[in-house]
Amino acid sequence: MVGKSRKELVNGSTQKEYQFFHYSEADHLYRNIIHFADTILFEYTYQDGQLYLSTNAKGQLNLSAFKDFFDTYKDNAPQFGEVLSIETCLGKTGEPYHWCSCKLSTKWEEGTNTPVSLIGKLQDITSLKKREEQLLFQCLKDGLTGVYNKTAFELRVEEKLKGGRIGWLCMIDIDNFKVINDSFGHPAGDRMLEQVGRMLCHIFPEPDLVGRVGGDEFVVFTSTEDVGERAKSLLDMVESIVPEEEGRISASIGIVSSSGKKKENYQELFFRADRAMYRAKESGKNQIAFYHNSWATIL
Image (cartoon, rainbow, N blue to C red; front, top):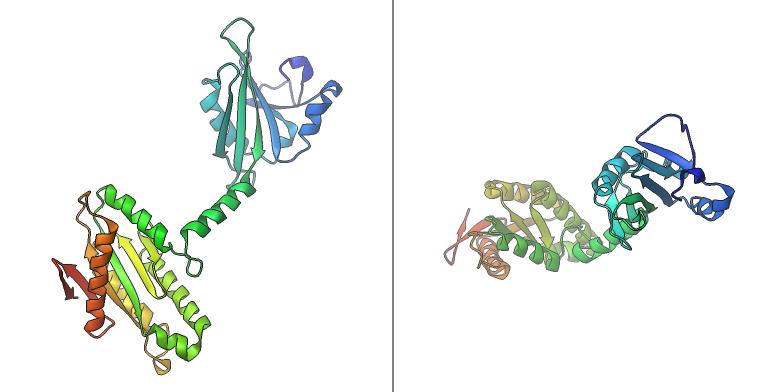
């Protein structure tokens, strides 16, 4: 693959940042490889500073993005006998999301430490990455609402607390949720939970964290200073889910602040937010309570 006699350049008379090549009959094996649409072969020759690509790269690969990626490695060539494996998102022609697996190897001048060429292949692994994302989503997210599940939410909050993050943990419980299930059936209850999940994600967008920790219990970790105002917005939105003549649905919210001290942990905050939430319920429901020094104060 290295000798120029084995390549016939497309528009070879014009020097470009990259060129395309195809192989002679003697190289039928390599020529057959490029018929696989998900595999692109390439070679960089140090003598002329030229990057050559197999012809099936046309229309498949964002050439500019690949050139930028490749420039990172051409001056950092793999050592003798080493094959470097990299996964990168390059972008495909007409498709910004395009994952590739790249393998690189160096051909060295015999008896010297001088690299002759850098050869490699790109393989499309977009479908594999999408499958990995689906599995990750299933592991991290609640299947009904799409927010974080109980375990994932706790882990994400613990990460923030270990970093000394100051914020607020909110515990949200839907009042009279059993009435919905008993009166209209579980599918209606599920639809309501889905709506609440969307409302929470709208009121507390990323980087805030939203999770579901029980049947009708949600949690939020936010660094916003107007957490009280946002909680009030949630109460108004939840009340609007079910028409008044069909029953009254509301939410009770308990809120506790994190201090930013590294010894603070999620379970302590959760316990306090939970106590504040029950204080809100005891005060007539559809309320917000803040936890302060073992006492919960209604907003």
